[in-house]
Image 1 (cartoon, rainbow, N blue to C red):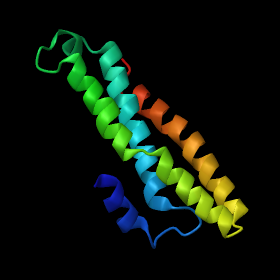
Image 2 (image 1 turned 30 degrees about the horizontal axis):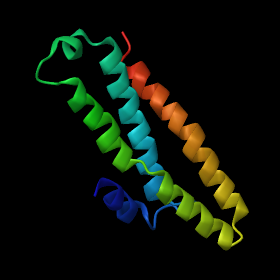
Image 3 (image 1 turned 90 degrees about the vertical axis):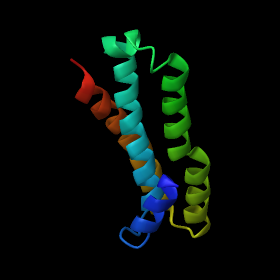
Length: 113
């Protein structure tokens, strides 16, 4: 639902790349960076019986995994290439991967002590 909402919100604002999926992927990478850094460094997470390891994995893999999706990106890249928009497809691929790594790193650095 979150990804669909972002896609609908950004559908007509940025036209060179599929902005909704790109924004969802970048947001998911940022959240994943925060969650994984918390899991690795937070004593509260380590001691908490409320937030079990299964629940942490459920959030990290479940929510972030459903928010970010490779299959949507592949379909949208295929659509761009079918339209012979190779610049848009390459830009989308580059922004997705480079931006994803940058957002993951920014999220993890935000929490790092």
